[in-house]
Length: 113
Image (cartoon, rainbow, N blue to C red; front, side, top):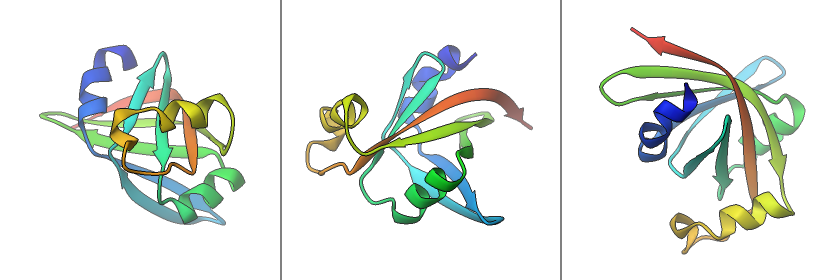
């Protein structure tokens, strides 16, 4: 199903929720790419999100166009290697210096009413 939502995901601003020690943290993310069942998000300014993902990889994302969707999955943070190079080469990051890449394996998609 994620392949059917690819264009919507890549054109939307998504709300990304993480947690650490049962304390939720939310941010908005705009530079999101879909590769297979994975999402790739650039870290340009994510201090707390980075810490939370390293401590607890369970995440939730919400986005909406004319319908809303909640995506749940497991995230891993990469501060070097092929995924960091991937986000550094995205045209959306041309004027930034990405610090890392977040790879999220989506395991549940729920339509919101």
